Length: 228
Image (cartoon, rainbow, N blue to C red; front, side, top):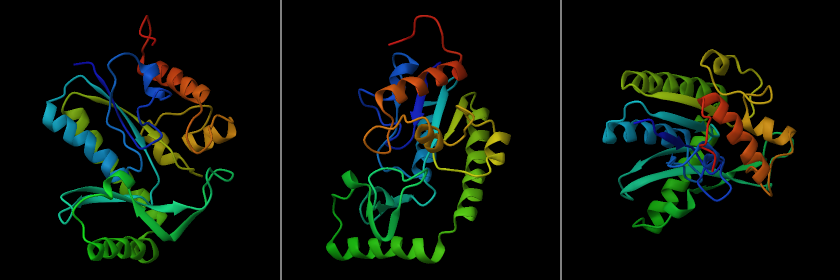
């Protein structure tokens, strides 16, 4: 098929300034604001399963480890959860966030959940953040999930380019898996912050989208007249 399919959070979400537009015409973008890593990975697996993909390339942009998501039978849909940020853009290389205030992916908050059900789910996620979440263990589980999905992508005759967003002090696991590197960094957050390529919040400026898109084109081997 030779399609390029992007899966990520708001950092990759299709808009007039998205880096995806620099990858050529016909890019398929599955990204959605507020997506969790389970959601981002599941969308790739499900897309291959439903479409019988072969010969496609998936650009998979991973997000913060403290976001989680599942299919909620009570709501009849997938819902992703994340903390509320207390600063509008990264402070240094990380945002400040408040684990006592959480919200689901906003467009998915509407539905058939009762106030009691909503409060139960809010309490569930707050409890997960305070009693369950461990960043190191969550990272290891993410690597396990990546290895599993990578095997499926390869078995079905497709390819993947992996992008990592959060700050990371030891990128050895990413290096070993051939993650995308730009400006000597494996963290897109670190790179975009150090390079002053952020817009008004955590997302790339127009120039930042162009720079990332151009570097991805080189990684994907895209040339010729496929510029937009």
